[in-house]
Length: 340
Image (tube, rainbow, N blue to C red; front, side, top):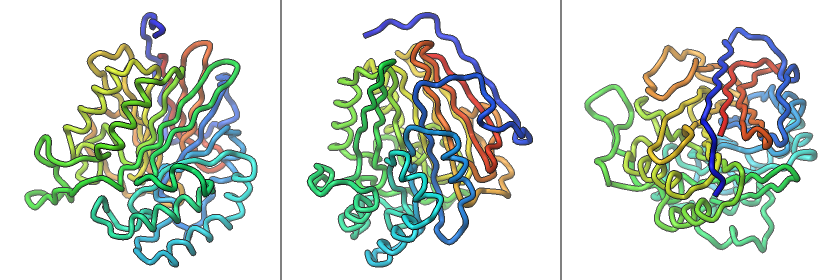
């Protein structure tokens, strides 16, 4: 395993009033990812041309690709077909590789998990939408989790797409405060389930990639807002942190969605010589415009409450990553740079 030098952190936060096009940049990434979540087919998505203009190598769906909320597979398929027919998305899909995960609204049940009775059928429709080959092992496994490896002359990137729905056990309603959900007792329940945890451990421990990107449809670090997040299963957050630290995997970061806001969260992890960052990007067609604030002890910078997508650039030579929140017309809403 490569030894890291002195860790340094460069944080650049640009206010939501900034009006700097994404193309005006001196940062030269060797490989780029764009990602986003919360996309209603009934609303216009004004960002597809901006995503394409940014020139990503890969587009990652972070979940809630559609808002179906149904166990009727004909309705689910119809909405996926509608999304596939969106002109801007079709244009992007013809030029850029598309990967990603689902969340509750495209899964089929709001805040749903293991109890959703149509999850196998929903998985089939999701894989169809993602153009997963009929002979892919993903067609026979339970859950949509998968990995993607990208090898360049300069280095390698592994993207680990998690399924936070298929195996996730029950949430605990909060009947004592105004929050919707409260954390389970420590040790009670799971986000990923045993099979997926075993898979993730193997992937990270065996990874030789320069950067490892974990895609989670729900936030991992922010844990006090009372909505869905890994923090509702605090032992699972600790397990993920411990796994990342023990695995020796290099350059691990998290991409998440769901919240209709965009923000950066960051924390130190014992045994890691770089911080763990959770970059939340949401939503694509609708955002939490009335956002008045919420506590997030891990937040870096300001919350973005307008429609946006995430853009991530990887610099192999300097072992550095730059993450940006981008709005309509390429407006730069926030930026964070991290050396690994």
